Length: 457
Image: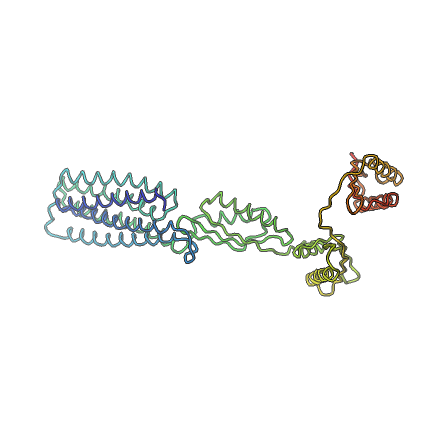
């Protein structure tokens, strides 16, 4: 338990005990029902503060296997018990005050400096502990300490009413003391109502005012969120548990979904630092998903790499073909089973009458040890690529030529420039033609990788 919470609770407990004892002694000495009523109020405060102290000892325990949301609700139970004590006190005070007012002969009330001193001292003590309790209650989101602060703020007003009643009694109005007692009861009743309503809200898991709308707006406006399916908010002690179900596009990769959730949670925590957020993202199909999107999604779920996806409409039938890359060291039997599984999953998604064909390619997963070829050889490759590009005419300005050799042979990469208005298909065809012509002239090269860039405009 926080030492600060323990300290302020113990100080409040001591103050309640001293005030209750002082008021009882002075009330009996003076015969003032107002002071005796205030003494009962302080006595109940003393008992309520004991409950508060025990509650915050329990509420600060971490969650365990039995109490998954922690022990914060014990503070609400303590506040509810305090509410019951306040209501009981109100009934007794009103009954006794009405009895005195109805009596033919009013009881004698002796007003002296000691009675005034005790009531004034009570107001000063209550003022200081209300400030301390509110500060710590706000810092630690403690319902029990907040209930104490609310109760003792009412004590100050009730003590002020008693002080007025004593003054009027001293001036010759004997019924003023009983009326002051009824005034104290009214303040206690108001405090009980406010405390009881807040406590019942907490016990019934009522969300803090405005919290639902604010969190719902944050989720709906978060980048990547399609919709808010469900939002539940549950305050438990100092913690605000937030349970969110939202929808995202099913074609998004997992790392993107994780980033969307993390960003939304961070925004919620900025607005509600005490929140404990659970966020579930449900993937949904979008209306504008293409066949390409669906094939890529299914392949990604199976951790398979596909490319060259071709979609054709053959009459009323749909034909889908693609290249699938698998570990080149796999036996064909295993690779074929993987391809068959992917084809079946795609057919299940697109419809049983779809035609699905795959081409298996080796994926080189091992890292190769390579080194640059000698410079004269690299320059020869550069010259050959430049000559071939001039002959073709579609590509120009060959540059950044690199040539490395490894256990598989020579790998050559280069950059070239192309008309920026040329369609990608035409550029790809020109690059393929250049790569083919280059390998015909340099058969030792096993792989050519070209990067086409637009000509400066």
